[in-house]
Image (cartoon, rainbow, N blue to C red):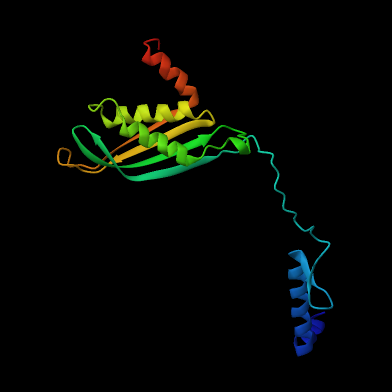
Length: 183
């Protein structure tokens, strides 16, 4: 047997044959081999994968979306503030394709609330809670919403500051009870 191995390795043609066999084995194990015309064809070792665009959504499928409103000017707390706002939300499970909201409508609702915000003295945290609550109430296909408001330094407040609020639909009912003193 040893003599046979030495004999094989001493011959250049044998070495090329071994390399050829190894190469064919490698390509075949990946599901493709060359036919006699040099084209790759599927082997019987693996079935070709078929792509499918099924409209079925697994129950564990989670969808989030986010957008940012940059450099929004708001007159609040006695001065003009420059805000960067990040809105992130999670859709309810199994949302139909026809029910996704256009984020531009949601952005306009956010800008409208901030432009006409009724209480100039509210801290950013309070304003952000009201903003987050409004988004979740107005868009029933959202399961949760996170709003981050970043305020740039101003003359009266020379510090960068931010407020991050997350509200889940299950907490929305709870917040009504707490607000009415029943919690």
